[in-house]
Amino acid sequence: MNFELMASMMCANYGNLEHEVAELEAGGIDSFHIDIMDGRYVPNYAMSLNDMRYIASVAKRPLDVHLMVEHPNNTIDIFIHALRKGDVIYIHPEAEYHPSTTLQKIINAGLTPGIAINPGTSVETVMEMLRIVKKVLVMTVNPGNAGQMFMPYVGKKITKLLALKDEMHFGLYWDGACSADKILEFAPKGVDGFVLGSSLLFGKNKIYSEILSGIRGLRF
Image 1 (cartoon, rainbow, N blue to C red):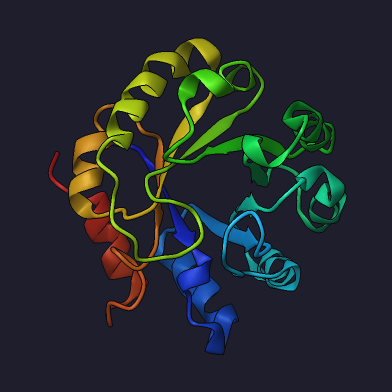
Image 2 (cartoon, rainbow, N blue to C red):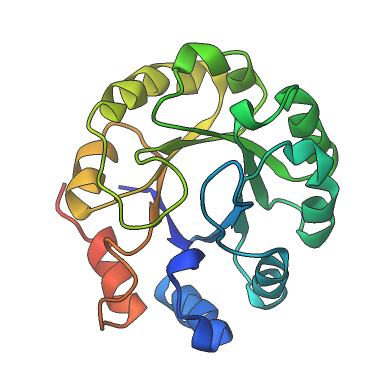
């Protein structure tokens, strides 16, 4: 079964970030998930613009940039100019007055547009944006911190989105509290990829190739 695996780089070892990137790529990671937080839209600070630039400079795989910031339209050009064609930028629709304007800037730059949907955000409120984005990132925890518990009611939202994704031509991705049992349940239903953090990938005292091959070898 084919599904994408993205490494949540806010959980990586910053003592040797170049080594982390190289080992993840050697292990078969599909992309690098970059969480940018401004301390306002979410009550935390995570990765910086310079972290993102550095990973972009050493990584061969795409970047998957998740902007948890207020009014991303005000700063989107900074991120666009630091990325490469085909990289992904997700915005939160609630964080912008006119999110479609920001998404159009991402499209015009040759990047892949996406939206991130919080646990408390309904599918109905983002329906029109589903027609223009290429990727939808479903938050299964409230954004802002790693290591949170999965919110079971988000499963019903994923079911709604799975019924729409072929018609509207977007990929559906899971972010938050991603354990093996969630991949076993939702990959066969049609979820296209999973962001891996402290639940499955980081801090396990195993080499990344072993962990990633184990995930891809799950018995469905």
